Length: 190
Ligand SMILES: [Zn+2]
Image (cartoon, rainbow, N blue to C red; front, side, top):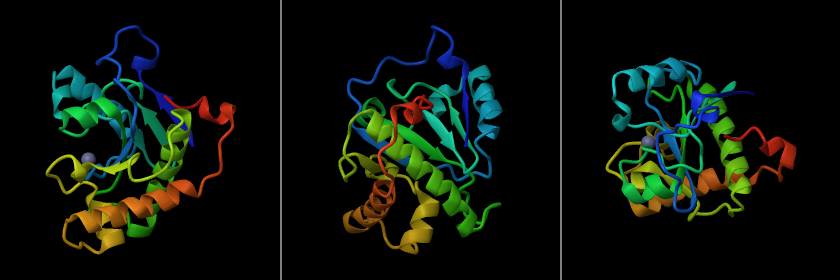
């Protein structure tokens, strides 16, 4: 796994204030064909056009690459929801477009990378792995996200509390499968 960091990790100026408190992670499906590296230019363009308000997350993940766009301790614009933006870290799972370039099997490799990053981030912030700390975007906002995971793991079941918890529990099980990381391993986190 290659970790790439944006200029926001090497310059004083950043986009947002610190989160009041980090409470957990939100796993997003990007609904695009872009790989994590493609988001480097995509986000540069978003900045150049003054369109950051359309949204961005801390980190963009596929099976090969983690692109750290903005520090995890800072507020993000990833949920369209003020509380979630100020308390949860957004993990954008790349190439998740339904009917896109990745088969379900291949997308699940990207998912696995996102579970590992989630496990590392939760450990870094000394948080447990449970329904309070592992959230879905659609719990905060009227969105299909995470649409690809919903299709693969829930076979497009209706959106309701019970099914959202089912997908949460699947994510939780996958994240809990990781053993504790060493401090050296956690250094890569942005
Ligand atoms: Zn989302």
